[in-house]
Length: 216
Image (cartoon, rainbow, N blue to C red):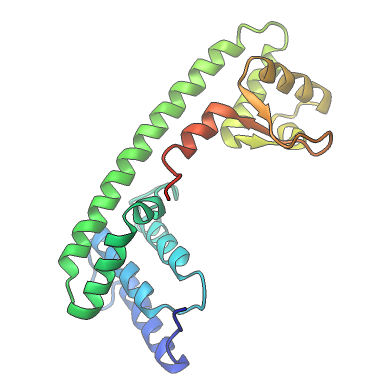
């Protein structure tokens, strides 16, 4: 297990990282800045646990703070996990030999491929949502309520009846009737198997979100 540096050194290193993030002594291009900041944080390793997660989150927060992203929707965790050996090897090369160029090239490719995948997934989700809306419109009198439930599912693809009511202002009986119709046409599936506190999963939507995330 990695051990954080002594408190006095930890404070000094984190102070230097804070200055770097605030463009002191100079401002770097945002993507380069994110690449360098991630390595700096992982090298400082300030916590006994969770440094990897915080270090990856730092990338997304920085991209949002500097206006590259409007929402925190770009996560490099999967790319780093998929290429974990290369990832750790490049971090070590920086620490032992100062080889920043190879790391920055790897990092920029991670940004590019992750953004391409996110764009493709977003397009597929929009197409799915439109197809399902058209299907729902054909189910008769309950279609109006079912469309409102479908809209709630787009915001929260695993959802409970109380949360549907909160999102749609439908009564529980109306929400339950609508969700049962969505079950019948194969759009949602109840996932708890219980009679109380049930959760419903927007099947294809969640499958698209999970696509490619099962990396050994």
